[in-house]
Image (tube, one colour):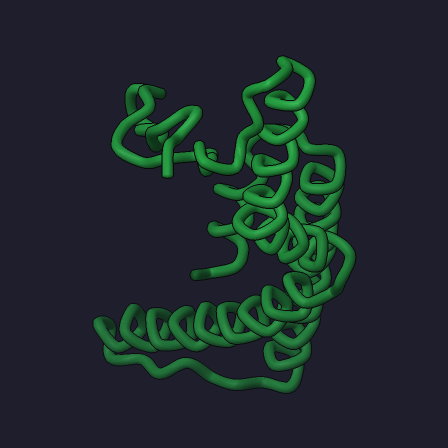
Length: 156
């Protein structure tokens, strides 16, 4: 098996290294006419594309047209907000404890904390929806950086 173009792209240097990107079977290429050779090469390259690149592309399109990423991130948002508010309460208790005081949980303070948590959740979820929508549009339109962004948002 011969390669038309070989190498992988090193992200730091944008240089191609060490991997075959397109496979060609030299024995399956007719050499009687240029058109026949070109047709055989094109068919082999297309088969290679269908076997190696199309599944990845279909996965990206699936992510771009479903709510999977959004739902996963919304679940993480809820956990992160709960953790942040719990840490904030612990920090407040420790701060007041230095002076020999304990935090008083009043009805008004509890209501304010609930409102703040609700507003925080709404804000973060709206920003998440906007970010996932932008990412999905980038995937569908083929704009650069989508796979890296996808890895960041997907939490993988």
